Image 1 (cartoon, rainbow, N blue to C red):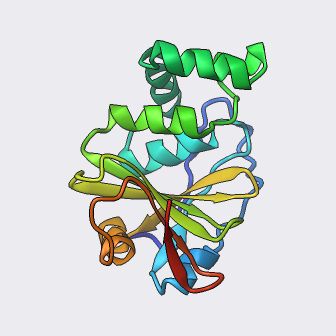
Image 2 (image 1 turned 180 degrees about the vertical axis):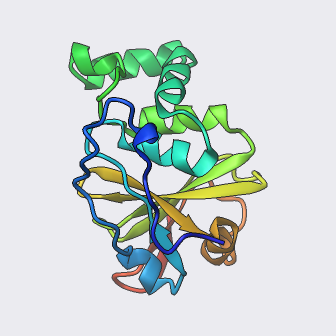
Image 3 (image 1 turned 45 degrees about the vertical axis):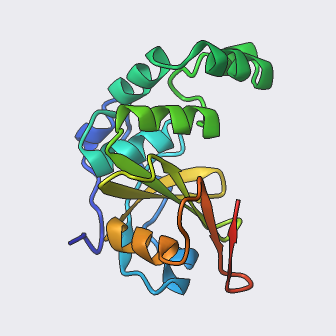
Amino acid sequence: MFNSYFNVEASMFPDSDNTYDYIPESSTVMNKLKQKHSLGITRKDGNCFYHSVAQLLNSNPYTLRENNFQQLTEGEVSLLYSLRSEEDATCENGTWVDHIEMNACLRLFPDHILILVDDDAYTVSLHGNLEAKNAFAVQLKQYHFRPIFCNAMKLRSIITKEFVNVNEIIYTHRNSKCSIM
């Protein structure tokens, strides 16, 4: 079950001025897939991925970000430094999350799979352990992450029912076709 409107409490953003620059709306991709859902609210502060995961998995976004950075492999840190500015490579508070950091974060939740709903590219992708018994969904739209409150396991089964033994599955609704990446 999910909320039709997600109320964000000020305690979720201890450094907040209690103003939010996003109003709940629906996901184009989720609507095309005919999935009942609602979107949570996250601030556009560079921590929106962690706020989204924290809201869905009942954790602290700042602790989550710090724990994630602490468990990055040497190779991931090296790649971050080669792709980002030195300041951004530290994954500090307020630095936008990319796929390297996102996939590393999933190691903190080995029994979960992330369903990333990209409403700009009109795709859905699965990240993490494909054998996981739990799932959660996050929207990406205009470089901003928001939690999706939905039946994520049902969404996962809709996406994967035609595919077996793939590392990543992408559903594109522009052409109503599925493609494997």
